[in-house]
View 1: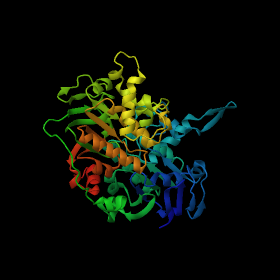
View 2: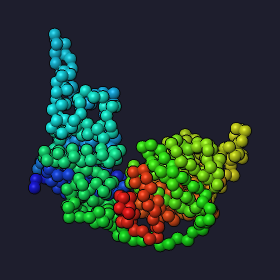
View 3: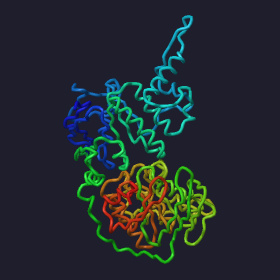
View 4: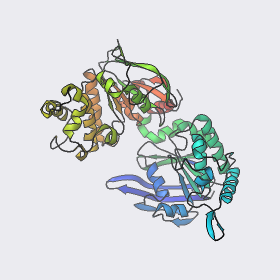
Length: 500
């Protein structure tokens, strides 16, 4: 079978980090090639090189048997490689036809004056949509379409360029199940027409339905490519995670008080985000919430903390129902939240380490609104020393710290409020291995002192390492509970796919 694109020892190096190492593979024509790998595996790097966003440090590519060098995205586009990004690039207030031909609308001349040829644009759009089997009017405003319909319009826009290779980055991440079915029907029709697609997804459950082959990357290395019809999800998970996929973690001594929960969540619901969420958090427990992208984990944490509203349900902290759900009220009840986006949400980058470590407990040390730096100092010094925050001086801007030390400042800020419960949302994102282990140690030490935690991470192996118990979410619902000491990474990944 003829390859539409072939790579030979394709390599990308950033400083001392090898993001992709000697990737060699043939992507055959008229097939859907799934690209799988955990975060940091090299998927994005490969796609960026194929689409001309970054250039390889070594190696080469060929397209249709001819050498291909893409110095810019335009070069890749001119070679008929088109990318459909996870975030839609449509203009909501424009029509379907205007979005598909944006920047290249057909023209006509009337009495010597050039004008947009609206009828030609709508006719061409109708013909394109018909060939793709899509029953959408060219004149419909994109804002009036469902998210699923908008996604297929995005693909129709890409198809208007007659691509040799179509790169699809997480195309189903925001779609409901019926919309996924509609998208898959479209992709099958495109494949039958001879279109070659590379399909990037975290959803293992989709592979058997849509992929012809699966190519797996791990830590920048090409682990292998297999025919989907001859492989199981377990085979692919083993390729993604290696030896640790089936290993069970050693037990960790904990001091959990299971008598009375410190946090009870009952029937918490928010339309289009999560539904009927109920669980208990025990005193001194590190509770993990697992799930794939879009499962609703962060949305649940934000709702409990009062950062986002919820439609129904209740939150009870230490026996007291939280009637007023906002961050100030929840902080007063003993809840803290380290967000996944620490730079923009967790810290004030222009302020000092001292100010950031003090900002959450100002109501306690400055009840009348009068800030007293002397009153703040003991808490600042305590967190710098206990969390081993590397800083020359507490008055240095927090932006001058490494990612790991910035994360420690976020944690220290909340520990200064003397919380009963602390939410850790992606606490290891963007930190090095040493800092990651230090953060985990902080979580365990605080648990031994009685602090209860909820831990969310897209790195499933972290959940097995850190947590005492793991809840599993899928598409906004809790679908199960696992004991990390009795669960392998393969089993946890399968559970997140709904295969409990």
